[in-house]
Length: 114
Image 1 (spheres, one colour):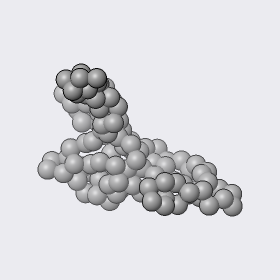
Image 2: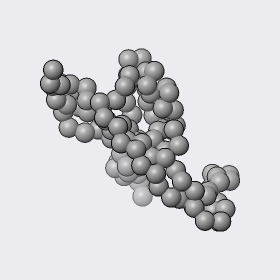
Image 3: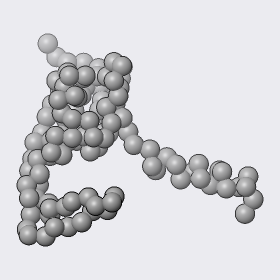
Image 4: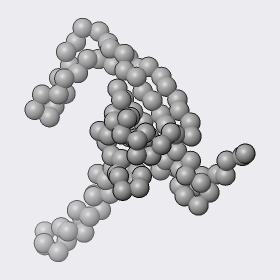
């Protein structure tokens, strides 16, 4: 395959690997950011949802998950939504055990009723 044909093919695959992020002032919220950092940088969310899920205990060993067995452990999953107003897109941040694991961009925000 020609070198000139490889680059466009790689560029088509790249967007699937991009993770979403959220900017709060000069700070950037990305995967791994803690709850405390998000509150300090972005303020309180518009809404929150908490739930507990059961997962098998896993330890990461050389970049690969290793199942420890022995049943399941409870993991706190929190979903925060930030309404940034009608001129900006809303954001949904998902935390597992106090760290960001997912950031979604939603539709445009809305004006808060007084």
